[in-house]
Length: 424
Image 1 (cartoon, helix red, strand yellow):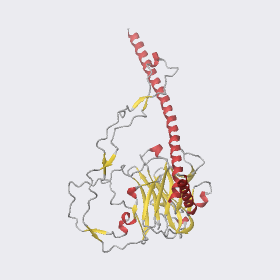
Image 2 (tube, one colour):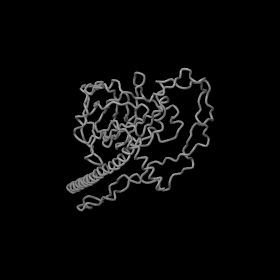
Image 3 (cartoon, rainbow, N blue to C red):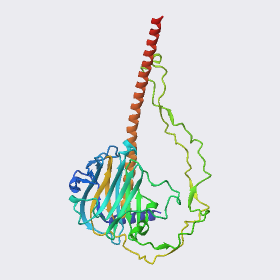
Image 4 (cartoon, rainbow, N blue to C red):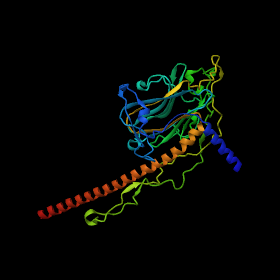
């Protein structure tokens, strides 16, 4: 067993040694502003270009581990820099970075719409004249709004840019997973990874885990740019009514746990009657209510099992497409020589960091996943402390308001008594 473990470590070490890192940026020092050049364009689609500032954000694991944070409302962003040119001929290409929508902690989803992308650009790119509508080789990153949340991945092929479209064989009606988008849309640091393999396949990963529904073959997910392998013979044939395509279903035997039902609010166990509380003047003191941490909401079944009636995916009869010609180099990205950070924000507060472009997925995940996990946990803890401080302040304010109301009631009551006495 020791021999096997040593061999595994040796193989991993060899992979990390032989890996090629084309570009990396961790924004460790203030000189990042000298390396990255902001576009000289004044506006795009009627909105100005905003600025980034150098910070770890308001809620972070390490205040000294900084990234760049969007600063301006209702603004586009466009900065870029050049690096030694390369291509991914016969090699894997990995693009990875971390991102957190910190503003969501303060605003929630209301009024929040933001997108921030990494773009691979040709070696001819001039950072001073960065144009978001100009040719780019690849675009990757999250587009987050209150109405939708997706990870975009656009490519350049045969003279133009093409947007990503979901695989046709992975729709929500057939596969029972978590509701789309299959990853949390929250305010904490997450790791985004895009992997292109030289066999014309690709992966999108979130916090190191592959997003099955957004991964596959280039021909499947950019079908509009390449003829399909097969065509439908006849669209008039219909799927039988008893044909069940669902591979997995919710377990009908799953039952609600006995301890599930809990009250939504409970008396605050940390609150106590103020020392100066006068029961005669202020009335009977009552515990303020807080959200019950054990409250789980309405129960919903979650256990998924194989569907015993699953018959596979039904489709119309198919025939080979006579116009189909395989392109073994759909994956190839030529003349990569610059990188851009581009996006749009209604509200500032998105922090980007840890950009890495390499040919080794193991290296990228070995670097990114542990860092993201530590940052994520620390940010939740930091935000929890902020929430606890605000809760305690709200409790104090509640007590002050309640005491003031009781005093006002007593004043009115005493005035009524005097008025009644005067009338007598």
